[in-house]
Length: 74
Image 1 (spheres, helix red, strand yellow):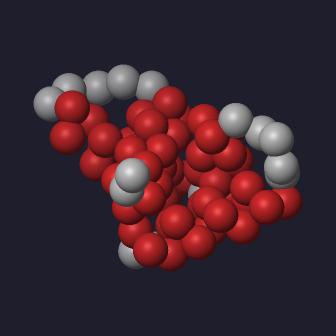
Image 2: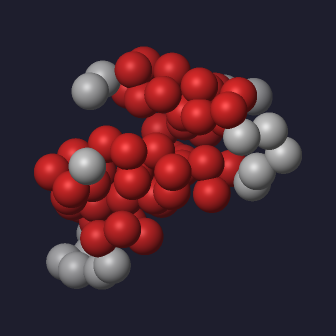
């Protein structure tokens, strides 16, 4: 899944769930992509943060938010 595909998935999930906070939308996306992709997001996020371990789900959600907000820009 490319960053652009992730943003599309995020946007579609947000359209299906209006009024839901961004972090909860990111959590929904992480649940949808499955455990393998969740671990990829988590490891990517922990590498960016310079940490060796952390909650996989929470790290994956943070990674999704970071990617979406980075591509969203101002």
